[in-house]
Length: 336
Image (cartoon, rainbow, N blue to C red; front, side, top):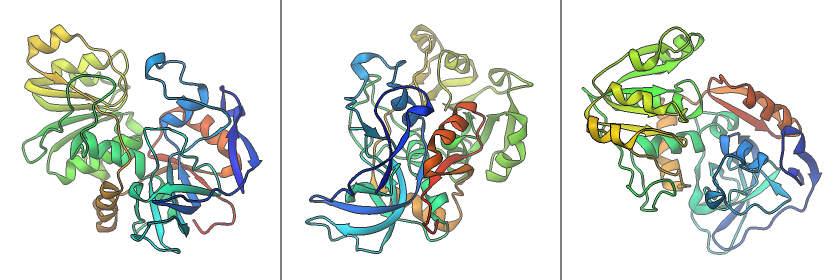
């Protein structure tokens, strides 16, 4: 089969199409013919060798590897003990994340733990289904239901979602991207008042998804645009995340999706909390998300589509930033 492999770390050019054996499913696994694979930040972090991640937090990285965790496709073979799905079922999911981060969905076939997948929502094609898994699971586990008891590698405190409902005020920074646009829809579905932060060109897109307000960060500092918030979901994270602390009411929470910096003393002084979590594969949650897609509550957006052989171009598009939804790879000859 064709697969995109890398034999070294670096820029998009390290991704090389090669012929490799089709894998065989083991106990509790299925073989999936890949129709589409979603791109996610961990893909390019791993492609680069994770230079910005502290060494003690880096997962084992043995070359060569096939990138990719998000998949939508068709089951073609069953491993021992698998009875929940059948050959021919259309499925989707985020595979094996966060360990070992080498599920390998940039390929024509991939082996998937049956516990990581769910039946693909019938309302969307494989391209849009592949745009769902990591982005939607991240938003779901941060905002709705963590769904596991694994400790976070980034903090000692256990992450707990804030109950969302009428009267809850939430700001989502990075609202137009993969995680952000799903978070907007989930928060709106729960009845919260949603303030979306993005560039002005995404305004109509975000209002259509359910945002009540859109803050154009190119014209206004988002930390000056709102006060008395119950929650800030900062999908961008980084060294500037602490600027949102002053927007929170006493007892409010800051949820940085990526590694963020903030002053612990300021947290205490303002009586607010800041926690994050590590998204984890979860087939049961994927089934809940599939139901939301089928009901029209969740509409996955696709920024751009690339053929499998053009994965390097897809990674280059990701490096440009300012995405509206997700980037997806398709496999030639498949009915996506």
